[in-house]
Length: 312
Ligand code: HMG
Ligand code: MG
Image (cartoon, rainbow, N blue to C red; front, side):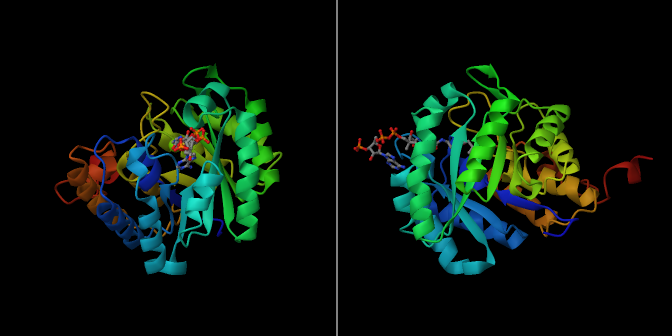
């Protein structure tokens, strides 16, 4: 990856929609993915192979993944979330070549989210890795509750570093560090990534910041300053985790692109197209989405560039 560029992993179709009351039909989710690709997104999480009775919003992930990957082939890197061997076997019925496993840094969140202990979740990953190797599939790793747990409170950074290293050693090509409930502040983000970089090359780390307290953009900037060049974002700021009550969605893709454009960092993503998708998604979701950049765009309603250029 070029030094002055960042990859955004669009998680709106998974992390975004999994926690929305208004479900989107398979046809609409395919349209959503197509619009994101047209806007320049190249890494897109297309769905999750989890229990449909627990996360009904993810039903139909197989059809979406197959449809998009058959249409766009190698133009994009589409990935899906898999919690265990059953999910992995379902993913293998699609053309997907990139899956993501997910573990937690706190026992209570692990139990609520995936119904097993942290240790059991790692043993489930062994079967996933075996199948991945056999089928030449890349595995990404998410680590949840890296700053705090909704049930246990503070999480020690030592634990986060230990588990991130374990995922890396198992073979995850990238470890996404999750602020699941959106509590982190930039100073904490810098501190944690400084520790992580001692055991995992920074090119193999990503930031996954939920925007519950409005700190996610600042946290991206803090991690960027530590050399992180991959961030997970969700169009409009959609979503959250069904097992992290009260938590907001991921940082909005529009907000991240606005920040990075301003820094002169390349993403290959058109903010104007994201704004169009924002309005499309608001109609589909029948509600206002959190991203203010998405609502107003780069230009203010009078068609002038907003920000200091006109404020002075
Ligand atoms: P379990 O209940 O422990 O599974 O589920 P089990 O092995 O005991 O099996 C029970 C039944 O579930 C069986 O069916 C299995 O076949 C079935 P039965 O025999 O009773 O008819 N089953 C499955 N069905 C479909 N797909 C599967 C699957 N596995 C078993 N993969 C499981 C374990 C993890 C599947 C379940 O607890 C689950 O689906 N949880 C939902 C997890 C989830 O989607 N959470 C949100 C995503 S994670 C997240 O948002 C955080 C992240 O964004 C990072 C961050 O922000 O921190 C990634
Ligand atoms: Mg998340």
